[in-house]
Image 1: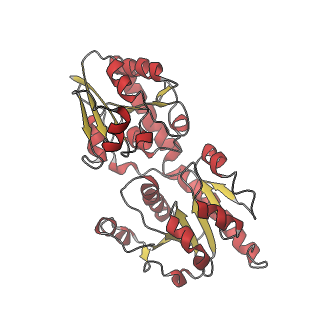
Image 2: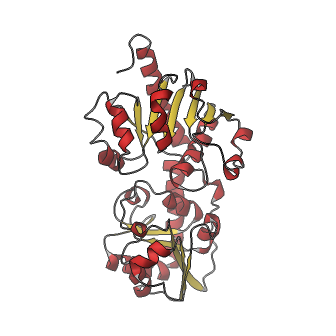
Length: 349
């Protein structure tokens, strides 16, 4: 087990890799690791308010690369880290880059060619398959996998939702690619034994241009940040969400599973890891399947309750604290193995 590590960058509550990093820091602290934070830019007020200093993290001045002397350094999808790698490598013990996407950063490929990245970390096999092709051709490529920790405290489980309406929703950035073309048609076509009431969080000009219309009156369309994520899941009995993108391991899925919101999503990418079809939610291959499974969800009250509990158990068993700590321990063992090896031989040039 390593004693300490340094994060290049800083978490935030804006979602994506920033939220991912937030949760992994909590896991590392629980493992007894001293976590250092070296931001790549001055912190804003919301970042300062996250309280990592109170949790025990050690702060460095932003971009103070000399202060990283002898430290294992890791960064989550941070392009500024990649830009500064030629300087960081002068001081770091090892360097690790976590790619949460399904595509490569240009500098990720370039610095792999130069041997500046010791380890590439992935959450899923399908993400690795997408991004490894352009990396393993160059220098020594060391891919490692970890089970991400999902810190569920901010998303309380709700199982006593009102039954006067069937409340559903979807949440994403205001990115037209995040919305499948049949999304509004699915909402219009599915049926329920009570009045339908929808909520879209992340609607904006980009999305409206894609559909050429606004949702029906029974669907409230709000811009990003107009509602807290916690309030969103509290309101939504089901997350009925189709996209045109290939999702790696959607944090939205974890949030819904923790909150007791049933997932009805695309049968591809990371959704297939989070949802066991017919057990912890529903996977759909096309619009008609979405309509059938969303309608079934609306009608089958007892089935919904069984699914939401099964999803919560799956989340705890696969992405809870213990499985994450076990997988990170294996990653850290590889870091130390390389360090010992390089005490006799230089890093690849």
